[in-house]
Image 1 (cartoon, rainbow, N blue to C red):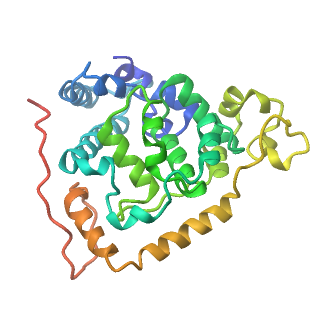
Image 2: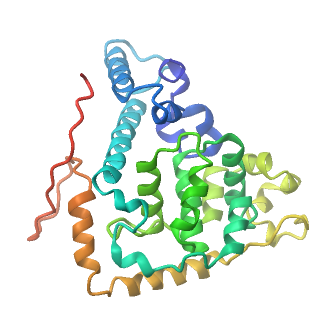
Image 3: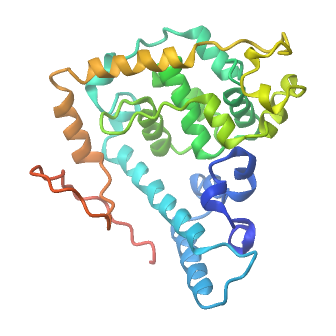
Length: 308
């Protein structure tokens, strides 16, 4: 009720930043995960609200149609990712693309893993998000993706080394979404874009004034806006806060080289086609596609009658 009556206004943009997401996001995911609310009930309420907005003059404090469209899309993605695990339960233990199995060595970075889990990587925005997650049991999706990206690409940790620990931090843990997403953000599907988030840029973009960082990393509270995202460059950096555990630019360069080599594997393309055929999105689009001689993979996807 609070989300649809006004709290969700600006959701389309506010969901990206942890500064605004705690109040602007729907916060319905735990209730979906634990079965307290059904997907049908939420979808029906969203669609009813959409018709209500269309039938009335615009209200200054009301949630907008764009906000509702964004929520509706994410509810559909929710079901899409659950279907991945339902259709191939083996992805709980194995990479979507089997060629990725030997990409990273299991249990090879225990010190890095521990620093990441404790929110002591030396990158303030990463550490602030991790500490907030452990305290609150929830953080917005973009920051979840960034945390996994940092572990997978910067620290080069195998997704199975942190899969279960990270799941235990989420009050809204849903196996299908969790496993599919950490594999996507780790680059082991073979069909998704490699999203290597720059932790400093994300901090400037999502927490430009350092408000969120100061809340969760009090040892950096005295630093200025110019210093707080890169404290290692400041002479005023507190000694109790660590220096960066890795150099981001060098780590990303090494990760890209590893994936470039992986794609030369003779079975990589065949595996990628198999994954796309079984797990790729069937979302219809109105955009005009480029003419191609290769037909995209076709597959039947489970339908959901959300109005029933």
